[in-house]
Length: 524
View 1 (cartoon, rainbow, N blue to C red):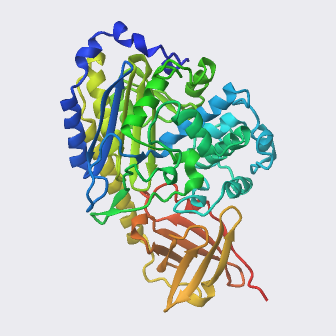
View 2 (view 1 turned 45 degrees about the vertical axis):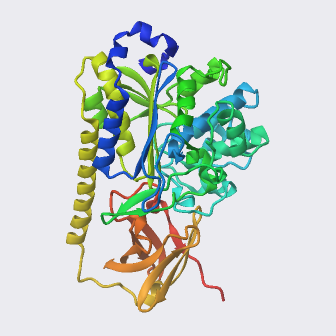
């Protein structure tokens, strides 16, 4: 069955076909009201919002503050890190190179990165650039993200080397599992095919031609003259500032830093099928079609089925493809630690809505859906839904379920059990082939965990039961305490560690469960 989203009309005719849309369009005051309500509901410090319709900027505005306890208001020029919304830019960079004749989306990765190697030799030979972009590698959700988050010290070479050790959990091209590292490999393809750094290519061939003033491919490249929003999150109901948790190597997966004004240029180009506002072609029709062609089937979230009538969803090249009130929809979410983004494009209505907030929260998705609903509900014959209230309810219910799971685990643990060995017997260096080394030490009568790869991953090990401890990270902003379980040899030596996040609400990029840490023999 052909997805309706594959048929993308020239957006300039949308109002002629659907004249009632104009009457349904909300006013600036209506959008202001939705933004303020979302900020109040989710306690957001600052939000930037952009809406484009029929090739024009309908709304571009900032609300709130750049950083708590410091002067500075968000406006339409304030830069936000848009997280995984960046993936569409990486795919577009590859499309530009395809137009240049430098590559094809069906090129084998090994033809551009000879040292690229997956766990399975056949998969290595067959893996294409398209596979890098469509989350169908066979690896589990977020596989290897600990190489880059939080504050991982990996290089692109480290990440490419790690793929050979990451074990698949499904067959190649058979299942959707979201993957950040493959986009870093895609960024390396951009660099090798272009002879430039990924960041320089994206800025010179995408951001600058589009006139995305102030927008950069990685936040470290921002000019001192531009205001960049600071990430925030709540720790035990207290608002705190935080870092993004990502380093420059993650740029192809989530590094684009942009403003509401800049994002209007990007949305209008995509809605106009690769043609820029000055009439120049950025992406050829053939390559534009590649970007939005569905590839990997994706489970449709229940709330989208129930409230937006979406029943079939897929992932294209850097875009989720589905429907909203029967309208074809291209969308993507983005998140870095302390900042979230959401973008929706309705090609048949020539409508785009974008929001980014400097808080770890569902506020950006909620307000974008609320605004889109106000544009589309009358046309669809549906009543306006309270997407802000709906997202708030889903978010709180998810947190409550996670708290219940943690409480149940505590209730069922063998509280009277003791470690099998004296604490000093657990001390040592342990290594995982894709991740690297961690160290267990004994200090002041307690075990401590320290990672060489991620400086923030250090903390005291609190006994849970038997030979399982809980790593309580010193930096409580991580919200990622983890079980650390030691395996004993028949001779009674603690020779292996397996890990798992304590709470189901832990961000999936803390892929502790993918680690297989083996004791490194002590040097003689």
